[in-house]
Length: 128
Image 1 (tube, rainbow, N blue to C red):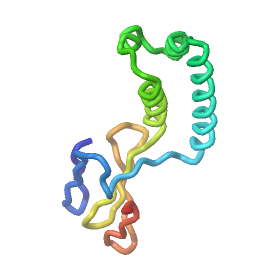
Image 2 (image 1 turned 60 degrees about the vertical axis):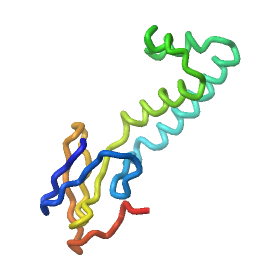
Image 3 (image 1 turned 45 degrees about the vertical axis):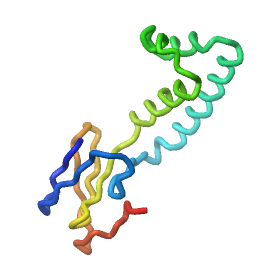
């Protein structure tokens, strides 16, 4: 999503990182299983790295020969692996800077539902 039209007429742009009106939401029911998965994957990767079997570890998780040919360092491999899982679980939310309406991504990527604050103003709930 690069632009999202708000019902108030404002256009919400997503064309850079660290936007003060954007958030990544993780459902509570995903939080603990994700944490458990994260610890398990990190532990198993460390064991694979110590045993010199990172290639087998990656192949067992569906990575392709093309990915393996990149010969990424451990940090980048873990970044890719962990971030891909998080991206699959999270939803994006935007707060309109004009009216404060929250736009939350639905299960269907790039589809949003809106929630309007009772105050009808921007309350900065996603601001730092």
